[in-house]
Image (cartoon, rainbow, N blue to C red; front, top):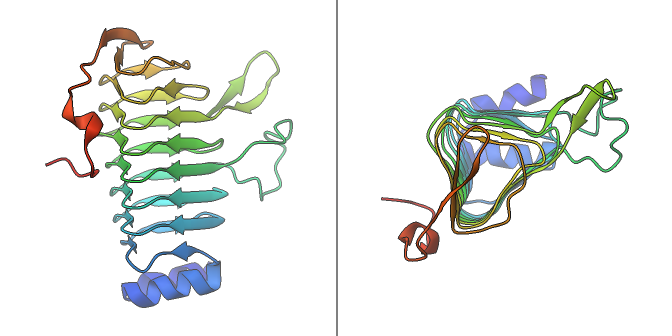
Length: 220
């Protein structure tokens, strides 16, 4: 615990050096972590990546952030690392407690990301607004045990505010999940607005929409 406290008192350049050397992280010189508690088993941050203040990311096997991806402030990112001894999920021998973010992807602020199983957020995707929950694990009432499934958020997607995404769900590339929706299954059709509780296909999205062809993650 003491070793994890030391970086909080260091300026960023020394903090990055310390995290890389003593925790085996791979943090690019142009990446940055604010005043945050980020201690997965392994952390890989590519060029231009950022984790903002007051985010907590613990009990994961891996967080991998590709170039210019961002995790905003005050996010809670957790799971159950396969490096720990636990009777939970022992039947899932291939489970990976990971968060992967493609280039230019963004998680804004005040979200809960449960990475008991793998969550993959694609290139140029945005987990927008506030208070969205990505929950990969639950109780299997038939088997009376904890169970988990991965979540896939495709490339160039937009997840509206205050959504719930459950394990096994997939939001296809070039798609939108409307605000306050529940995504609890895997969809495949791109260029679609999905919304509702539970979410279903509502309408097609014009392929002229500029969000889906932008060259940088930043939206002005």
